[in-house]
Amino acid sequence: MASGLEDRSQRIVDSALILAEQGGFDAVRLRDVASHAGVALGTLYRRFRSKEDLLVAALDREMKGLEHRVLSRLPEGDTELDRLDQLFSLVTRNFCRKPNLARALLKAQVCGRQEIAHQVAGFHAQLERLIVATLRGSVPSAARPPTEGERRLAWNLDLVWYALLISWSSGIRTQEAVIDETREAARLMIEGWNGADAPCARRSGAPQRAD
Image (cartoon, rainbow, N blue to C red):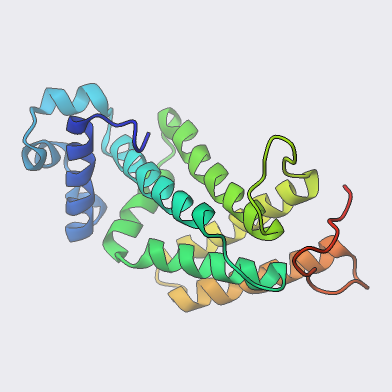
């Protein structure tokens, strides 16, 4: 939805991001967003059904920008764990750099509205693509799609990171704790993926495990 948004929708999303950054989820009142964007309230409603729909659209746009940045220059490192550590450091710091906005985006995702489930699933699919690309040190292609093992590892790491991010949002963990604990989860998962007696992480260019 990012680059596909037309100008008026882009202005609406920009306004929602500004208001969320200033005052969090509760500050994103659709009437205020419409006024800030210089559009009629009816115009906003024709594009976005609720504040959650609007905030998830904003998240989609932000995530597409991050995805382009990461895939253009994948994290470097000798091992999968080194590269994943860089990825989650980048993603976590990028997400948490504006705490009010980050908490608003998280609250929108967990609201339980069925009509935005597809967009929320898209956010997780984007992150899982980044995890797989980081794992193998190259972008998956039609000729070499993700293996079942890569997909499962990416899915589980996504779940762990997201749960830690919610705990950060609740004030239970610091940003650094989210990064550290995601790294530890990645270490344990890679160790299990490779086998208990195998090295913790394979080096770049080493043969991939056959699933």
